[in-house]
Length: 248
Length: 299
Ligand SMILES: Nc1ncnc2c1ncn2[C@@H]1O[C@H](COP(=O)(O)OP(=O)(O)O)[C@@H](O)[C@H]1O
Ligand SMILES: [Mg+2]
Image (cartoon, rainbow over all chains, first blue to last red; front, side):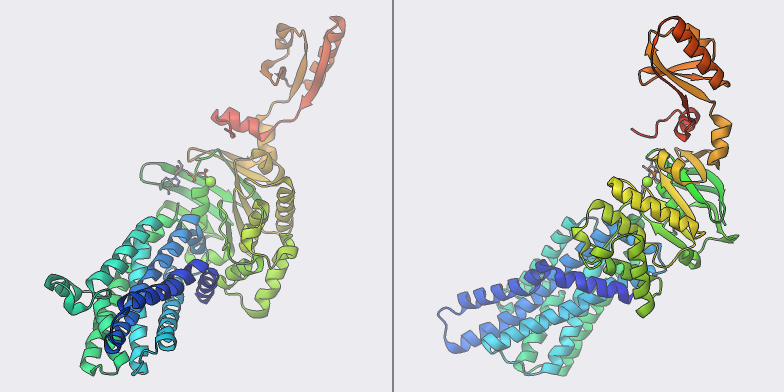
Protein backbone atom coordinates (compact mmCIF):
# COMPACT_ATOMS: atom_id res chain seq x y z
CA UNK A 1 0.00 0.00 0.00
CA UNK A 2 2.86 2.35 0.75
CA UNK A 3 4.20 1.76 -2.74
CA UNK A 4 0.90 2.84 -4.27
CA UNK A 5 0.82 5.90 -2.04
CA UNK A 6 4.28 7.01 -2.95
CA UNK A 7 3.67 6.46 -6.64
CA UNK A 8 0.49 8.46 -6.49
CA UNK A 9 2.21 11.29 -4.67
CA UNK A 10 5.09 11.33 -7.14
CA UNK A 11 2.71 11.45 -10.08
CA UNK A 12 0.89 14.37 -8.55
CA UNK A 13 4.01 16.31 -7.72
CA UNK A 14 5.03 16.03 -11.36
CA UNK A 15 1.62 17.21 -12.47
CA UNK A 16 1.72 20.90 -13.30
CA UNK A 17 -2.03 20.93 -13.89
CA UNK A 18 -2.57 20.10 -10.25
CA UNK A 19 -0.40 23.01 -9.11
CA UNK A 20 -2.43 25.29 -11.35
CA UNK A 21 -5.86 24.19 -10.16
CA UNK A 22 -4.94 23.89 -6.55
CA UNK A 23 -2.67 26.85 -5.86
CA UNK A 24 -2.17 29.27 -8.74
CA UNK A 25 -5.80 29.62 -9.77
CA UNK A 26 -7.08 30.24 -6.23
CA UNK A 27 -4.37 32.81 -5.66
CA UNK A 28 -5.29 34.59 -8.89
CA UNK A 29 -8.95 34.56 -7.92
CA UNK A 30 -8.19 35.81 -4.44
CA UNK A 31 -6.06 38.69 -5.69
CA UNK A 32 -8.53 39.60 -8.41
CA UNK A 33 -11.63 39.60 -6.25
CA UNK A 34 -10.02 41.39 -3.38
CA UNK A 35 -8.98 44.07 -5.86
CA UNK A 36 -12.51 44.32 -7.24
CA UNK A 37 -14.34 44.37 -3.94
CA UNK A 38 -12.01 46.68 -2.08
CA UNK A 39 -11.49 49.18 -4.89
CA UNK A 40 -13.17 52.12 -3.13
CA UNK A 41 -13.99 51.07 0.37
CA UNK A 42 -12.79 52.24 3.72
CA UNK A 43 -10.21 50.38 5.71
CA UNK A 44 -12.57 48.42 8.03
CA UNK A 45 -14.76 47.15 5.17
CA UNK A 46 -11.64 46.24 3.28
CA UNK A 47 -10.42 44.15 6.18
CA UNK A 48 -13.80 42.45 6.49
CA UNK A 49 -13.88 41.62 2.80
CA UNK A 50 -10.38 40.17 2.86
CA UNK A 51 -11.06 38.06 5.92
CA UNK A 52 -14.10 36.62 4.19
CA UNK A 53 -12.65 36.13 0.71
CA UNK A 54 -9.47 34.34 1.69
CA UNK A 55 -11.05 31.45 3.60
CA UNK A 56 -13.90 31.55 1.06
CA UNK A 57 -11.58 30.68 -1.79
CA UNK A 58 -9.72 28.16 0.30
CA UNK A 59 -12.98 26.34 0.94
CA UNK A 60 -14.03 26.64 -2.69
CA UNK A 61 -10.80 25.49 -4.27
CA UNK A 62 -10.09 22.51 -2.05
CA UNK A 63 -12.95 20.81 -3.86
CA UNK A 64 -11.08 20.92 -7.15
CA UNK A 65 -9.01 17.99 -5.92
CA UNK A 66 -11.97 15.85 -6.95
CA UNK A 67 -10.89 16.37 -10.57
CA UNK A 68 -7.51 14.80 -9.93
CA UNK A 69 -8.99 11.96 -7.93
CA UNK A 70 -11.53 11.12 -10.61
CA UNK A 71 -8.84 11.28 -13.23
CA UNK A 72 -6.38 8.98 -11.50
CA UNK A 73 -8.96 6.30 -10.68
CA UNK A 74 -10.52 6.42 -14.14
CA UNK A 75 -7.17 6.30 -15.92
CA UNK A 76 -6.05 3.32 -13.86
CA UNK A 77 -9.31 1.56 -14.58
CA UNK A 78 -9.31 2.23 -18.32
CA UNK A 79 -5.62 1.49 -18.84
CA UNK A 80 -5.95 -1.86 -17.09
CA UNK A 81 -3.72 -0.79 -14.20
CA UNK A 82 -6.40 -1.63 -11.62
CA UNK A 83 -6.79 -5.09 -13.13
CA UNK A 84 -3.06 -5.60 -13.17
CA UNK A 85 -2.78 -4.66 -9.51
CA UNK A 86 -5.55 -7.15 -8.84
CA UNK A 87 -3.20 -9.88 -10.04
CA UNK A 88 -0.67 -8.93 -7.33
CA UNK A 89 -1.03 -9.65 -3.61
CA UNK A 90 -2.10 -6.03 -3.04
CA UNK A 91 -5.51 -6.10 -1.38
CA UNK A 92 -8.15 -4.17 -3.37
CA UNK A 93 -9.19 -1.92 -0.49
CA UNK A 94 -5.56 -1.11 0.22
CA UNK A 95 -5.22 0.00 -3.35
CA UNK A 96 -8.11 2.38 -2.79
CA UNK A 97 -6.70 3.67 0.48
CA UNK A 98 -3.23 3.96 -1.02
CA UNK A 99 -4.56 6.16 -3.74
CA UNK A 100 -6.69 8.22 -1.36
CA UNK A 101 -4.14 9.13 1.32
CA UNK A 102 -1.86 11.23 -0.91
CA UNK A 103 -4.80 13.50 -1.65
CA UNK A 104 -5.29 14.09 2.07
CA UNK A 105 -1.72 15.26 2.13
CA UNK A 106 -2.05 17.41 -0.99
CA UNK A 107 -5.21 19.18 0.15
CA UNK A 108 -3.77 19.80 3.56
CA UNK A 109 -0.69 21.40 2.02
CA UNK A 110 -2.96 23.40 -0.26
CA UNK A 111 -4.88 24.90 2.66
CA UNK A 112 -1.63 25.66 4.42
CA UNK A 113 -0.15 27.42 1.38
CA UNK A 114 -3.27 29.47 0.69
CA UNK A 115 -3.59 30.61 4.29
CA UNK A 116 0.10 31.41 4.37
CA UNK A 117 -0.35 33.44 1.21
CA UNK A 118 -3.17 35.37 2.93
CA UNK A 119 -0.98 35.99 5.92
CA UNK A 120 2.04 37.18 3.96
CA UNK A 121 0.35 39.26 1.30
CA UNK A 122 -2.74 40.55 3.07
CA UNK A 123 -1.69 40.06 6.66
CA UNK A 124 -4.91 38.32 7.60
CA UNK A 125 -5.13 37.32 11.25
CA UNK A 126 -4.61 33.64 12.09
CA UNK A 127 -5.54 33.97 15.71
CA UNK A 128 -6.27 30.35 16.59
CA UNK A 129 -3.72 28.31 14.65
CA UNK A 130 -4.48 25.06 16.48
CA UNK A 131 -8.17 25.36 15.69
CA UNK A 132 -7.31 26.16 12.07
CA UNK A 133 -5.10 23.11 11.95
CA UNK A 134 -7.84 20.81 13.22
CA UNK A 135 -10.40 22.41 10.93
CA UNK A 136 -8.07 21.93 7.98
CA UNK A 137 -7.64 18.25 8.72
CA UNK A 138 -11.38 17.71 9.00
CA UNK A 139 -12.11 19.68 5.84
CA UNK A 140 -9.43 17.71 4.02
CA UNK A 141 -11.05 14.47 5.10
CA UNK A 142 -14.50 15.63 3.97
CA UNK A 143 -13.31 16.82 0.59
CA UNK A 144 -11.20 13.79 -0.24
CA UNK A 145 -13.93 11.42 0.90
CA UNK A 146 -16.39 13.10 -1.44
CA UNK A 147 -13.67 12.92 -4.10
CA UNK A 148 -13.16 9.21 -3.51
CA UNK A 149 -16.87 8.50 -3.77
CA UNK A 150 -17.10 10.49 -6.98
CA UNK A 151 -13.98 8.84 -8.40
CA UNK A 152 -15.20 5.28 -7.97
CA UNK A 153 -18.72 6.10 -9.12
CA UNK A 154 -18.35 8.02 -12.37
CA UNK A 155 -17.88 6.21 -15.66
CA UNK A 156 -15.87 8.90 -17.45
CA UNK A 157 -13.53 11.72 -16.55
CA UNK A 158 -15.85 14.25 -18.16
CA UNK A 159 -18.67 13.18 -15.93
CA UNK A 160 -16.33 13.65 -12.98
CA UNK A 161 -15.42 17.11 -14.20
CA UNK A 162 -19.07 18.07 -14.44
CA UNK A 163 -19.80 16.77 -10.96
CA UNK A 164 -16.80 18.62 -9.56
CA UNK A 165 -18.04 21.88 -11.07
CA UNK A 166 -21.44 21.36 -9.52
CA UNK A 167 -20.03 20.51 -6.12
CA UNK A 168 -17.34 23.20 -6.09
CA UNK A 169 -19.07 26.08 -7.83
CA UNK A 170 -22.65 25.29 -6.86
CA UNK A 171 -21.59 24.73 -3.29
CA UNK A 172 -19.59 27.94 -3.26
CA UNK A 173 -22.47 29.97 -4.58
CA UNK A 174 -25.05 28.54 -2.20
CA UNK A 175 -22.78 28.67 0.81
CA UNK A 176 -21.98 32.34 0.65
CA UNK A 177 -18.38 31.99 -0.44
CA UNK A 178 -18.94 34.61 -3.13
CA UNK A 179 -21.46 36.94 -1.56
CA UNK A 180 -21.87 37.54 2.14
CA UNK A 181 -24.08 34.91 3.66
CA UNK A 182 -26.56 37.31 5.27
CA UNK A 183 -27.14 39.07 1.97
CA UNK A 184 -28.31 35.87 0.29
CA UNK A 185 -32.02 35.19 -0.25
CA UNK A 186 -33.65 33.16 2.51
CA UNK A 187 -34.04 29.93 0.58
CA UNK A 188 -30.35 29.94 -0.29
CA UNK A 189 -29.48 30.49 3.34
CA UNK A 190 -31.58 27.48 4.22
CA UNK A 191 -29.89 25.32 1.60
CA UNK A 192 -26.49 26.42 2.79
CA UNK A 193 -27.03 24.78 6.16
CA UNK A 194 -26.82 21.45 4.38
CA UNK A 195 -23.51 22.18 2.69
CA UNK A 196 -20.06 21.51 4.14
CA UNK A 197 -18.72 24.65 2.50
CA UNK A 198 -20.93 26.91 4.60
CA UNK A 199 -19.86 25.40 7.91
CA UNK A 200 -16.22 25.29 6.97
CA UNK A 201 -16.24 28.89 5.79
CA UNK A 202 -17.88 30.18 8.93
CA UNK A 203 -15.54 28.27 11.18
CA UNK A 204 -12.44 29.34 9.28
CA UNK A 205 -13.49 32.99 9.48
CA UNK A 206 -14.15 32.76 13.19
CA UNK A 207 -10.95 30.90 13.94
CA UNK A 208 -8.94 33.39 11.92
CA UNK A 209 -10.55 36.25 13.81
CA UNK A 210 -9.95 34.35 17.03
CA UNK A 211 -13.51 34.31 18.25
CA UNK A 212 -14.75 30.82 17.58
CA UNK A 213 -16.56 29.25 20.46
CA UNK A 214 -15.98 25.64 21.15
CA UNK A 215 -19.50 24.36 20.83
CA UNK A 216 -19.69 25.92 17.35
CA UNK A 217 -16.36 24.39 16.47
CA UNK A 218 -17.46 21.01 17.71
CA UNK A 219 -20.67 21.22 15.73
CA UNK A 220 -18.80 22.12 12.55
CA UNK A 221 -16.27 19.35 13.00
CA UNK A 222 -19.05 16.86 13.57
CA UNK A 223 -20.85 17.97 10.42
CA UNK A 224 -17.67 17.81 8.32
CA UNK A 225 -16.82 14.43 9.76
CA UNK A 226 -20.26 12.98 9.13
CA UNK A 227 -20.31 14.15 5.52
CA UNK A 228 -16.84 12.67 5.09
CA UNK A 229 -17.85 9.36 6.58
CA UNK A 230 -20.90 9.30 4.34
CA UNK A 231 -18.64 9.81 1.33
CA UNK A 232 -16.32 7.09 2.50
CA UNK A 233 -19.10 4.61 3.11
CA UNK A 234 -20.49 5.35 -0.32
CA UNK A 235 -17.05 4.82 -1.84
CA UNK A 236 -16.55 1.50 -0.08
CA UNK A 237 -20.01 0.43 -1.06
CA UNK A 238 -19.51 1.28 -4.73
CA UNK A 239 -15.93 0.10 -4.98
CA UNK A 240 -16.74 -3.48 -6.08
CA UNK A 241 -18.63 -2.06 -9.05
CA UNK A 242 -15.58 0.00 -9.93
CA UNK A 243 -13.40 -3.11 -9.74
CA UNK A 244 -15.78 -5.02 -11.92
CA UNK A 245 -15.66 -2.32 -14.57
CA UNK A 246 -11.89 -2.37 -14.46
CA UNK A 247 -11.72 -5.94 -15.76
CA UNK A 248 -12.23 -5.25 -19.43
CA UNK B 1 1.36 -28.17 -12.24
CA UNK B 2 -1.64 -26.30 -13.60
CA UNK B 3 -4.98 -27.89 -14.21
CA UNK B 4 -7.87 -26.16 -15.86
CA UNK B 5 -11.03 -28.09 -15.41
CA UNK B 6 -14.38 -27.33 -17.08
CA UNK B 7 -13.91 -23.59 -16.95
CA UNK B 8 -16.68 -21.47 -18.44
CA UNK B 9 -17.15 -17.73 -18.36
CA UNK B 10 -20.01 -15.55 -19.57
CA UNK B 11 -19.95 -11.84 -20.08
CA UNK B 12 -23.36 -10.19 -20.28
CA UNK B 13 -24.12 -11.51 -23.73
CA UNK B 14 -21.10 -13.42 -24.93
CA UNK B 15 -19.91 -16.81 -23.86
CA UNK B 16 -16.18 -16.18 -23.72
CA UNK B 17 -15.13 -19.63 -22.48
CA UNK B 18 -17.12 -22.79 -22.87
CA UNK B 19 -16.14 -25.78 -20.75
CA UNK B 20 -12.41 -25.40 -21.21
CA UNK B 21 -10.18 -28.13 -19.76
CA UNK B 22 -6.50 -28.87 -20.16
CA UNK B 23 -3.36 -29.56 -18.23
CA UNK B 24 -0.08 -27.69 -18.24
CA UNK B 25 2.94 -29.57 -16.98
CA UNK B 26 5.75 -28.03 -14.97
CA UNK B 27 8.51 -26.44 -16.97
CA UNK B 28 6.71 -26.43 -20.26
CA UNK B 29 6.24 -23.54 -22.56
CA UNK B 30 2.58 -23.71 -23.28
CA UNK B 31 0.94 -21.96 -26.21
CA UNK B 32 -2.62 -20.75 -26.23
CA UNK B 33 -3.59 -20.07 -29.81
CA UNK B 34 -6.71 -18.59 -31.28
CA UNK B 35 -7.99 -15.67 -33.32
CA UNK B 36 -9.01 -12.36 -31.76
CA UNK B 37 -12.04 -12.83 -29.55
CA UNK B 38 -11.34 -16.52 -28.98
CA UNK B 39 -11.25 -16.06 -25.20
CA UNK B 40 -7.49 -16.15 -24.62
CA UNK B 41 -7.33 -12.98 -22.51
CA UNK B 42 -10.34 -14.05 -20.50
CA UNK B 43 -8.63 -17.31 -19.59
CA UNK B 44 -5.39 -15.49 -18.74
CA UNK B 45 -7.27 -13.12 -16.43
CA UNK B 46 -8.83 -16.07 -14.68
CA UNK B 47 -5.40 -17.60 -14.13
CA UNK B 48 -4.14 -14.23 -12.89
CA UNK B 49 -6.94 -13.99 -10.29
CA UNK B 50 -8.38 -10.90 -11.95
CA UNK B 51 -11.65 -12.53 -12.98
CA UNK B 52 -13.36 -14.47 -10.19
CA UNK B 53 -16.87 -15.04 -11.48
CA UNK B 54 -16.37 -18.11 -13.62
CA UNK B 55 -17.50 -21.67 -13.27
CA UNK B 56 -15.22 -24.68 -13.16
CA UNK B 57 -11.93 -25.05 -11.32
CA UNK B 58 -8.34 -24.05 -11.70
CA UNK B 59 -5.72 -25.98 -9.74
CA UNK B 60 -2.12 -25.05 -9.18
CA UNK B 61 0.00 -27.86 -7.81
CA UNK B 62 -3.22 -29.72 -7.05
CA UNK B 63 -4.51 -26.86 -4.92
CA UNK B 64 -7.48 -24.73 -5.93
CA UNK B 65 -6.44 -21.31 -7.16
CA UNK B 66 -6.74 -18.83 -4.29
CA UNK B 67 -5.42 -15.32 -3.71
CA UNK B 68 -2.58 -16.86 -1.68
CA UNK B 69 -1.28 -18.45 -4.85
CA UNK B 70 -0.86 -15.08 -6.56
CA UNK B 71 2.83 -15.05 -5.64
CA UNK B 72 3.43 -18.04 -7.86
CA UNK B 73 2.12 -16.30 -10.91
CA UNK B 74 3.50 -13.45 -12.98
CA UNK B 75 0.95 -11.85 -15.27
CA UNK B 76 1.90 -9.87 -18.36
CA UNK B 77 -1.27 -8.14 -19.54
CA UNK B 78 -2.13 -7.70 -23.19
CA UNK B 79 -2.22 -3.93 -22.79
CA UNK B 80 0.83 -2.11 -21.57
CA UNK B 81 0.19 -1.28 -17.92
CA UNK B 82 2.96 0.96 -16.65
CA UNK B 83 3.21 4.19 -14.70
CA UNK B 84 4.26 6.54 -17.48
CA UNK B 85 5.55 9.18 -15.09
CA UNK B 86 7.97 6.80 -13.40
CA UNK B 87 11.29 5.49 -14.69
CA UNK B 88 11.97 1.90 -15.69
CA UNK B 89 13.50 1.28 -12.28
CA UNK B 90 10.57 3.06 -10.65
CA UNK B 91 8.06 0.75 -12.30
CA UNK B 92 10.03 -2.37 -11.46
CA UNK B 93 10.37 -1.26 -7.84
CA UNK B 94 6.65 -0.53 -7.61
CA UNK B 95 5.78 -4.06 -8.65
CA UNK B 96 8.54 -5.55 -6.55
CA UNK B 97 7.16 -3.79 -3.48
CA UNK B 98 3.67 -5.06 -4.16
CA UNK B 99 5.14 -8.55 -3.86
CA UNK B 100 6.84 -7.67 -0.61
CA UNK B 101 10.37 -6.97 -1.80
CA UNK B 102 12.15 -4.18 0.05
CA UNK B 103 15.49 -2.49 0.51
CA UNK B 104 18.61 -4.01 -0.92
CA UNK B 105 16.85 -7.12 -2.15
CA UNK B 106 14.47 -5.01 -4.17
CA UNK B 107 17.26 -2.95 -5.66
CA UNK B 108 19.33 -5.95 -6.68
CA UNK B 109 16.36 -7.70 -8.19
CA UNK B 110 15.40 -4.61 -10.18
CA UNK B 111 18.91 -4.41 -11.62
CA UNK B 112 18.82 -8.11 -12.47
CA UNK B 113 15.51 -7.76 -14.29
CA UNK B 114 16.69 -4.64 -16.10
CA UNK B 115 19.54 -6.71 -17.48
CA UNK B 116 17.16 -9.44 -18.55
CA UNK B 117 14.94 -7.06 -20.46
CA UNK B 118 17.91 -5.21 -21.85
CA UNK B 119 16.97 -1.76 -20.59
CA UNK B 120 19.93 -1.02 -18.36
CA UNK B 121 20.84 2.07 -20.34
CA UNK B 122 17.39 3.54 -19.91
CA UNK B 123 16.97 2.58 -16.27
CA UNK B 124 16.35 6.08 -15.01
CA UNK B 125 14.43 7.47 -17.97
CA UNK B 126 10.74 8.06 -17.77
CA UNK B 127 8.59 5.41 -19.41
CA UNK B 128 6.75 8.11 -21.38
CA UNK B 129 9.92 8.52 -23.46
CA UNK B 130 10.13 4.80 -24.36
CA UNK B 131 9.37 3.17 -27.70
CA UNK B 132 6.58 0.61 -27.98
CA UNK B 133 9.04 -2.27 -27.89
CA UNK B 134 10.80 -0.95 -24.80
CA UNK B 135 7.49 -0.58 -23.00
CA UNK B 136 6.58 -4.13 -23.93
CA UNK B 137 9.84 -5.37 -22.46
CA UNK B 138 9.33 -3.42 -19.27
CA UNK B 139 5.75 -4.67 -19.14
CA UNK B 140 7.20 -8.18 -19.01
CA UNK B 141 9.93 -7.15 -16.57
CA UNK B 142 7.39 -5.92 -14.03
CA UNK B 143 5.87 -9.37 -13.81
CA UNK B 144 9.27 -11.01 -13.35
CA UNK B 145 10.23 -9.05 -10.25
CA UNK B 146 8.96 -11.64 -7.78
CA UNK B 147 10.46 -14.59 -9.63
CA UNK B 148 7.18 -16.36 -10.36
CA UNK B 149 7.03 -20.09 -11.02
CA UNK B 150 4.48 -19.53 -13.73
CA UNK B 151 4.65 -16.69 -16.21
CA UNK B 152 1.47 -15.83 -18.07
CA UNK B 153 2.02 -13.75 -21.18
CA UNK B 154 -0.90 -12.32 -23.11
CA UNK B 155 0.02 -11.22 -26.64
CA UNK B 156 3.43 -10.11 -25.47
CA UNK B 157 4.71 -9.17 -28.91
CA UNK B 158 1.85 -7.19 -30.37
CA UNK B 159 2.95 -4.14 -32.31
CA UNK B 160 6.68 -4.18 -31.72
CA UNK B 161 9.84 -3.93 -33.77
CA UNK B 162 11.78 -7.08 -34.76
CA UNK B 163 14.65 -6.22 -32.44
CA UNK B 164 12.43 -6.08 -29.37
CA UNK B 165 10.72 -9.24 -30.50
CA UNK B 166 14.08 -10.98 -30.59
CA UNK B 167 14.94 -9.74 -27.10
CA UNK B 168 11.63 -11.10 -25.88
CA UNK B 169 12.20 -14.48 -27.52
CA UNK B 170 15.65 -14.70 -25.97
CA UNK B 171 14.15 -13.80 -22.63
CA UNK B 172 11.48 -16.45 -22.92
CA UNK B 173 14.08 -19.05 -23.80
CA UNK B 174 16.12 -18.08 -20.76
CA UNK B 175 13.09 -18.27 -18.49
CA UNK B 176 12.29 -21.64 -20.00
CA UNK B 177 15.78 -22.86 -19.25
CA UNK B 178 15.34 -21.82 -15.63
CA UNK B 179 12.68 -24.51 -15.42
CA UNK B 180 9.81 -22.07 -15.13
CA UNK B 181 6.44 -22.66 -16.70
CA UNK B 182 5.32 -20.24 -19.38
CA UNK B 183 1.86 -19.78 -20.78
CA UNK B 184 1.99 -17.85 -23.99
CA UNK B 185 -1.24 -16.60 -25.54
CA UNK B 186 -1.01 -15.34 -29.07
CA UNK B 187 -2.73 -15.15 -32.39
CA UNK B 188 0.69 -15.31 -34.07
CA UNK B 189 0.85 -19.04 -34.56
CA UNK B 190 4.39 -18.99 -36.00
CA UNK B 191 5.64 -17.58 -32.69
CA UNK B 192 3.91 -20.31 -30.77
CA UNK B 193 5.32 -22.93 -33.10
CA UNK B 194 8.79 -21.50 -32.59
CA UNK B 195 8.64 -21.13 -28.79
CA UNK B 196 6.24 -23.64 -27.35
CA UNK B 197 6.35 -27.37 -26.75
CA UNK B 198 2.65 -27.76 -26.15
CA UNK B 199 -0.40 -25.97 -27.50
CA UNK B 200 -4.09 -25.56 -27.09
CA UNK B 201 -6.15 -24.32 -30.01
CA UNK B 202 -9.10 -22.26 -28.91
CA UNK B 203 -11.84 -20.83 -31.07
CA UNK B 204 -14.97 -19.01 -29.88
CA UNK B 205 -14.27 -20.11 -26.32
CA UNK B 206 -14.00 -23.78 -27.17
CA UNK B 207 -10.88 -25.95 -27.12
CA UNK B 208 -10.60 -27.47 -30.57
CA UNK B 209 -7.36 -29.40 -30.14
CA UNK B 210 -4.50 -29.76 -27.71
CA UNK B 211 -1.23 -31.61 -27.49
CA UNK B 212 2.50 -31.47 -28.01
CA UNK B 213 3.47 -29.41 -31.04
CA UNK B 214 5.44 -32.26 -32.60
CA UNK B 215 2.67 -34.78 -32.05
CA UNK B 216 0.09 -32.52 -33.63
CA UNK B 217 2.29 -31.96 -36.62
CA UNK B 218 2.79 -35.69 -37.01
CA UNK B 219 -0.85 -36.45 -36.49
CA UNK B 220 -2.40 -33.91 -38.80
CA UNK B 221 -0.01 -32.76 -41.40
CA UNK B 222 0.27 -34.88 -44.50
CA UNK B 223 3.56 -34.32 -46.25
CA UNK B 224 3.19 -32.22 -49.32
CA UNK B 225 5.12 -30.56 -52.08
CA UNK B 226 4.76 -27.15 -53.62
CA UNK B 227 4.90 -26.89 -57.40
CA UNK B 228 4.99 -23.75 -59.48
CA UNK B 229 5.47 -23.66 -63.26
CA UNK B 230 3.63 -23.27 -66.58
CA UNK B 231 1.88 -24.96 -68.12
CA UNK B 232 1.42 -27.73 -65.61
CA UNK B 233 -1.27 -30.28 -66.20
CA UNK B 234 -3.62 -30.35 -63.23
CA UNK B 235 -5.00 -33.79 -64.00
CA UNK B 236 -1.51 -35.21 -64.05
CA UNK B 237 -0.88 -33.96 -60.51
CA UNK B 238 -4.21 -35.20 -59.26
CA UNK B 239 -3.00 -38.73 -60.00
CA UNK B 240 -0.64 -38.37 -57.07
CA UNK B 241 -2.84 -36.80 -54.40
CA UNK B 242 -5.01 -33.84 -53.36
CA UNK B 243 -4.18 -30.57 -55.06
CA UNK B 244 -4.99 -27.07 -53.88
CA UNK B 245 -3.80 -23.87 -55.51
CA UNK B 246 -1.79 -21.49 -53.38
CA UNK B 247 0.42 -18.47 -54.03
CA UNK B 248 0.34 -18.89 -57.79
CA UNK B 249 1.27 -22.58 -57.62
CA UNK B 250 -0.11 -25.81 -56.29
CA UNK B 251 0.15 -27.75 -53.06
CA UNK B 252 0.10 -31.47 -53.63
CA UNK B 253 -0.48 -33.68 -50.59
CA UNK B 254 1.00 -37.14 -50.82
CA UNK B 255 2.38 -39.80 -48.60
CA UNK B 256 5.37 -40.32 -50.87
CA UNK B 257 6.64 -36.83 -51.48
CA UNK B 258 10.07 -37.80 -52.75
CA UNK B 259 8.73 -40.28 -55.26
CA UNK B 260 6.18 -37.76 -56.51
CA UNK B 261 8.88 -35.13 -56.86
CA UNK B 262 10.92 -37.45 -59.04
CA UNK B 263 7.90 -38.24 -61.16
CA UNK B 264 7.05 -34.58 -61.56
CA UNK B 265 10.57 -33.73 -62.61
CA UNK B 266 10.54 -36.50 -65.20
CA UNK B 267 7.15 -35.33 -66.42
CA UNK B 268 8.27 -31.72 -66.76
CA UNK B 269 11.43 -32.68 -68.61
CA UNK B 270 9.46 -34.81 -71.04
CA UNK B 271 6.94 -32.07 -71.80
CA UNK B 272 9.44 -29.22 -71.72
CA UNK B 273 7.71 -27.49 -68.83
CA UNK B 274 9.59 -24.65 -67.18
CA UNK B 275 9.56 -25.36 -63.41
CA UNK B 276 9.80 -22.23 -61.32
CA UNK B 277 9.62 -23.89 -57.93
CA UNK B 278 9.50 -27.42 -56.59
CA UNK B 279 9.95 -28.05 -52.92
CA UNK B 280 9.03 -30.13 -49.91
CA UNK B 281 6.59 -28.31 -47.67
CA UNK B 282 7.07 -28.55 -43.92
CA UNK B 283 3.80 -29.12 -42.09
CA UNK B 284 2.73 -26.01 -40.18
CA UNK B 285 0.52 -25.47 -37.15
CA UNK B 286 -1.23 -22.76 -39.06
CA UNK B 287 -2.55 -25.27 -41.59
CA UNK B 288 -3.71 -27.57 -38.85
CA UNK B 289 -5.56 -24.76 -37.14
CA UNK B 290 -7.18 -23.80 -40.42
CA UNK B 291 -8.25 -27.32 -41.22
CA UNK B 292 -9.73 -27.76 -37.73
CA UNK B 293 -11.64 -24.52 -37.43
CA UNK B 294 -11.95 -23.13 -40.89
CA UNK B 295 -10.85 -19.78 -39.48
CA UNK B 296 -7.79 -17.87 -40.48
CA UNK B 297 -5.80 -16.57 -37.55
CA UNK B 298 -5.07 -13.31 -39.23
CA UNK B 299 -7.66 -10.98 -40.51
N1 LIG C 1 -15.43 -7.11 -20.36
C1 LIG C 1 -16.09 -7.72 -21.33
N2 LIG C 1 -17.42 -7.56 -21.46
C2 LIG C 1 -18.11 -8.19 -22.43
N3 LIG C 1 -17.56 -9.02 -23.34
C3 LIG C 1 -16.23 -9.22 -23.27
C4 LIG C 1 -15.43 -8.58 -22.28
N4 LIG C 1 -14.15 -8.97 -22.46
C5 LIG C 1 -14.15 -9.81 -23.51
N5 LIG C 1 -15.39 -9.96 -24.00
C6 LIG C 1 -15.79 -10.84 -25.13
O1 LIG C 1 -15.37 -12.14 -24.83
C7 LIG C 1 -14.83 -12.77 -25.96
C8 LIG C 1 -13.39 -13.20 -25.68
O2 LIG C 1 -12.56 -12.08 -25.51
P1 LIG C 1 -11.03 -12.18 -25.15
O3 LIG C 1 -10.87 -13.09 -24.00
O4 LIG C 1 -10.49 -10.80 -25.00
O5 LIG C 1 -10.41 -12.86 -26.46
P2 LIG C 1 -8.93 -12.86 -27.05
O6 LIG C 1 -8.00 -12.44 -25.98
O7 LIG C 1 -8.72 -14.25 -27.49
O8 LIG C 1 -8.91 -11.93 -28.20
C9 LIG C 1 -14.93 -11.77 -27.09
O9 LIG C 1 -16.10 -12.08 -27.82
C10 LIG C 1 -15.08 -10.46 -26.40
O10 LIG C 1 -15.85 -9.58 -27.18
MG1 LIG D 1 -6.65 -10.98 -25.99
